[in-house]
Length: 307
Image (tube, rainbow, N blue to C red):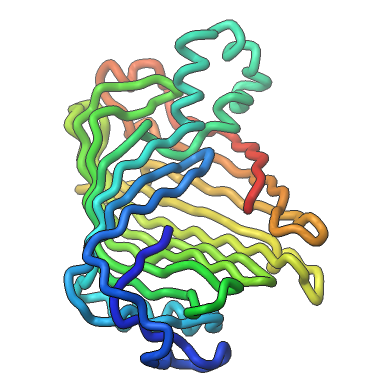
């Protein structure tokens, strides 16, 4: 996703610890910008609104630790608004397969805790959502250069939807989600780095789905031309911990780790993620929880191609 704002400043030196401002390469002020992102698990279109005419800092190719520090230091007062609609294609595909080709879905049940359809499509617990984000943005682009791109965000997000996905089935549910997050995507000639750190609250309109508070961490790194080959350089992980809103009892653990294999001389990497989703018997009550005798666990096996 990209956002163009006025009086852009940029980092003159890629290794500088602080963002440097400059007047060269300034772009005309745009109050509104429409952008989209396509992905097998999460696709979205967003309207970006600049709330002020203050310049967005250009960090260039900063160290990862410097990026986090810079974003956190500007986390309190929002300067940008994003209105977004999103859809989760593969999670919804799992719903579609179970509803329209049940025999195929059942044949994919390899073991008690491993269904191949679920393993590939697990992740988001809703088919789509609408959201509003208010916060700050930093840009990793350098004006008049194309080798460093991407943006970082920190701020507050409100999301809503009217369906919940349970066991690859749609459940009518008017839900609301409130969170604070810091996230970003940065791509350069040598690597691609993505991260997201979130804390939030999710309230369900359906009385048989438990309200939660949660903590979520995600990090992904691709090194297209690594000097040394280690697990750290071409890997990623995601962990989300859901807790019951009032008692903070553990309700759900979602965990994946992945390994990436960049294709030689191409900005493409093959990736494979493995992990699990553990859910407490307390996640659902009443009729929704009647088919669960206790805690459940499902394993994840997720191939992907990353650009």
